[in-house]
Amino acid sequence: MSCLVIDIRVWQKIAGKLAEKHHVTIREIEECFANRCGAELTDSREQHASDPPTRWFIAATNHCRLLKIVYVLRDSNVHIRTAYEPNEVELAIYRRHGGNTE
Image (cartoon, rainbow, N blue to C red):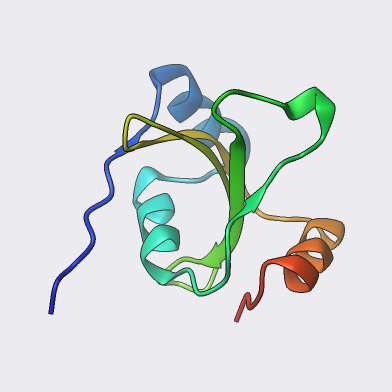
């Protein structure tokens, strides 16, 4: 059995915001990537447009904490933009278009 290795990169400023504002650790982000079972969505809102496109998904950590993970793929690396507990609107959008959050 092979294991997919994902190179997750987090700028120091983003890591500080994740810890201070959202109380999210890099380990939790890694767990969400490992535990995701739904699709990733692309943020098509004009104010969030980027090149490469901003992607996101919702998944649970190993302790069942749901997080919305927002990132871009650049040179085969995952660059985290933010991660936080999703609100009800985000959960509904993801359940409708992305799949399972269980």
